[in-house]
Length: 159
Image (cartoon, rainbow, N blue to C red; front, side):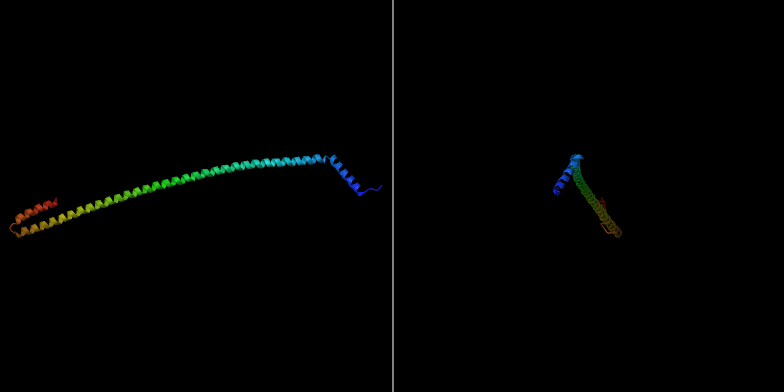
């Protein structure tokens, strides 16, 4: 009997399949595939859990950012209001300073006018006294009436 190569290949293959079944290769293969499926499921569950945590963290950061922007806007508004108050107070103080300066200038002008009037009256009185002395010394007639009139005028100027 002469055996063909195909027969040896078929017998070898059958023997190989028999050995695989005897060592429970299909069971081991199914177990390995099931283990791999379980690991993939666990990784997917972990990925979903991480994604949910990341979304929660993102929402938290967005909320904090919105709060920070609102707080910054409130600070800017407060600073603007405070700046306006300071500017208004500065304007008020400047107006008061200017008004005080104007009052001081008017008071100084009034004092200067009063001093000028007093100096003019004093100079007029001195001149009247000199004229009266001159008339008295010269002994002119009617000087007495002139002196009396001059004294009245000097008294009127003094008041």
